[in-house]
Length: 254
Length: 254
DNA sequence: GAGTGGTCTAGACCACCAG
DNA sequence: TGGTGGTCTAGACCACTCC
Image 1 (cartoon, helix red, strand yellow):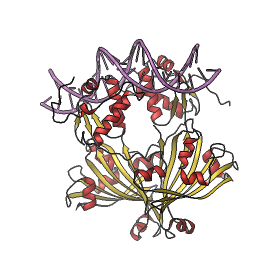
Image 2: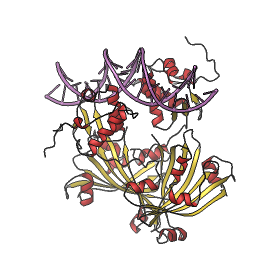
Image 3: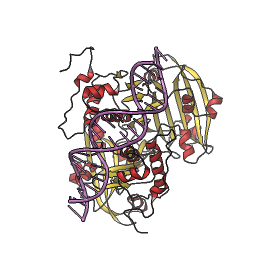
Image 4: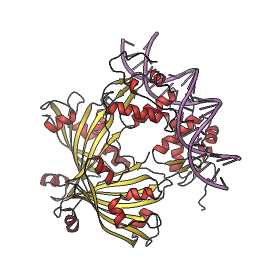
């Protein structure tokens, strides 16, 4: 009932770490702390014990303890102030428009994702696509068009271009798996993406696919994704029904 | 006394750090490295010397060197692979929809920002505003409406709500300074923000203000900003002309 | 096997904040 | 003045990649 400065029970007693695990200690500790925060054992506003004592209690060194805490600070769950201490700011964070597929996004929101493949072709890259993928114009690339559904309802039309040598795609594969899943399965790690978010109004064709009226508001997103070494992997232009979808994110000042 | 550069390009020779400076060593090193990357002394794709040698060359310890590198890895400029090395991925990053005002965004893009204050009032918070600011309904709050311009052309209509005790606002102040600037000047540090981005079509009133047609595509953004300890500082709902403005960001997988 | 980054430790000193 | 987080160090061992 009372907004306590320190937490009554001893949440740290609930933390257990496994030194034989291959999972790094700092990550184990961070994960456990995050769990305590999400379970409200460390409620918003509560103060953590100082890092030296926590390190001691958990049997890790201070640098390791600090790294765990910093991990959660970077994600906006904790705030630290020199001379004061460490406090819980919030329990939940919208991840920053993460490098996930819409598929994962929907599942996390408890909605059932679906895909209807409109077309899978190899086409000659036009100037825009070639520039995005850093290929010569007219190079043959995959072109995939999909209608994405949530709980059976149209959500977005997605158009993606990929270098041909990268990965094999086909309609049956794409009905079952997200595009990013297929890319990862091909051993490619997507590391960086440039995104631009805008708005437009629906053309007749878009409206028909999405079940909207012509002129309805659509959210647009174009994205170029790059691998480990900065090589373009995928370029896509997508439109979402603004009436059914929006982007949420949490920003943290570092 | 170092021997003169044996390799044609020895970028590390260009790095100098000042141990008397109050700026942390790791940050000095990171900043210098970033400068080398942006100046193309360390071009995209080039490999860095291993961290132990770099630490040695710069006269810092390995943990400090690592911290500098990690700083740039987190921002997507560098990529590291165990057993392989550290490489430059890219020279420029669109900051992740940063916690900046539109004012700063436009200036960075080389466009001249302007503001026309439409209204500055104290109003009773409705349910939505009260919930966002975590106040009781009908609490009196500031309500600021502004038309934002770039190079004299309308770009966005912004509507912001702030707790009254927080900061003094007035039309003349807001014509000169960004809202976030005023908040910072009041000694409040904005640390976290939740944003939702969507799309809509222009009402007649919006269209008139923005110089668009009724039904034109608009990009919408609503944001709640929080301070250090998670207290809501500001709630705003904004609409941007989709024909003149979009959000760009770079995502980095961590 | 050689070389790279990834993790972890123990300890030191400093800067800031609150009483 | 005492307590907090912030920085920095020296060294150890491990895991991964490539030859």
